[in-house]
Image (cartoon, rainbow, N blue to C red; front, side):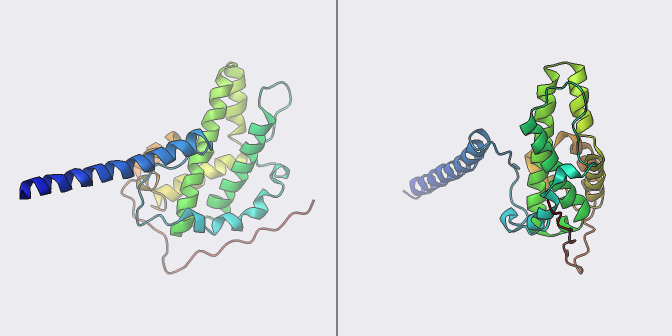
Length: 215
């Protein structure tokens, strides 16, 4: 009888774990397929807090007021191209936002809540880049070069440099991204996988104030 009860308990636990896993994976797929969200497929760890509580996002609202005025953000080239205005606008907004999160507010990733939000946003940034390049490939090498050059504006290059620095100093790690690490970052994440976290815990992040532009 004891063996039967034990076996039944284990079976119940196994079914329970299967259901929980199904809910997690199912909700992720719904977010991706229905809401169009690209989410970070990582399990919670002690380095990541709640992205909903991230203070870096409101700290960067001013950077998104008129991002096209910043000539270091991507600017549409003269001549013919097939870039949709909606994609271009999203590219500029994401560049301005991520530049603020990891360059202007460079110590923000040391706060667990901010790190969770920034890791998620990094995934969305690179997913948008990849999606636009895939579309461009349909129209030949010339169109692909135009899109690749757009994603290589001054602020985009600054973002890449900042991300490499954050990875090198252990502020961002492979475990933070889980299964969803962007392809362009995988080399650095592997190279510095054992890098100690050099965030100064004795000095909490203080948001850099950004001047508000007027229309």
